[in-house]
Length: 137
Image (cartoon, rainbow, N blue to C red; front, top):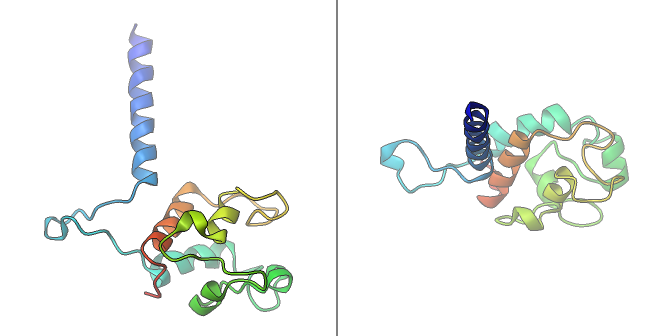
């Protein structure tokens, strides 16, 4: 009986954590009640791209040569690839970048190619930035 109680508590905690990580968060400051947080391209997105994407997706990189996608600048991100746009502001589910990062594409297209998938936290930040309009902030 005790094991069942602990298992149920662990399950409830896991569900709460998953919900917190995948749901948009509301600002915690009472003065900001009802406002959505702003995800910053410079402060939140660039560090992810710099740490995991720049090696391939910059001028001279293999990903840049194959697709034309330059993730080193906002303009490059928004321009997309020689095959089309990567970001649909306000709609992460329609954004090719999210599809590739969440591994909803064929294995040869998944990003980062041949490496470990981005963490759920990093993918959530990118989704939130796109949901908020993919601003250059």
